[in-house]
Length: 273
Image (cartoon, rainbow, N blue to C red; front, side, top):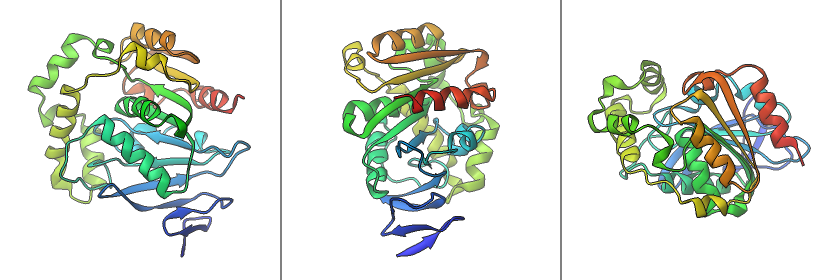
């Protein structure tokens, strides 16, 4: 048994003890990895934590630093770096959406969380879709941000770009964020190559699979996003219980630094009965 974090969260065997204020960080054993995670905020009325799933090639900070303080007011928010990203060292297996979904669920089990809300940005949104399809019992609500359910979600030029992608094409802020926190900074080229291969092999999900999702879902994207607005509308129409928000004058990076009202939009959706 050990005590850690700013507010003295009690941790027993790596599990967050119910009823304690959340200010916890550390590594948890997950499917052969040591996954770095943090728990922010405190339990709200529902007690349902929110899990944030970062984008490809990112850390959780580069995807969510601007919204994390607002989202963690009145609720527990769990953030973590997935395989080969940020503070989580890579292991000898490819990146895949299915494996990332299994890792997310395994991490929640380590933290003693049986059900959660999930918000995924970009690749994280695709992981969220895989989670709800593979483990619907774990999901209460979803926020799918700038993510696609099929290859029709982006222009053909987007997919063709992966055939000649170079490390130098990776946004400088993502490269710098990785090097600053990675346990093995020299793994950056491997992380980049695995990320490219994951997108090249992306198949997505059928309309029938998307229609089977029962969790209430907020579809969120920018009008200048990598994901085409019409694809966001298609996802919204396929989901049985969904809402749609398209942010004006917003591209794939700007949506990570949204106007101050966007976290309120998200929390209002999550807090609704």
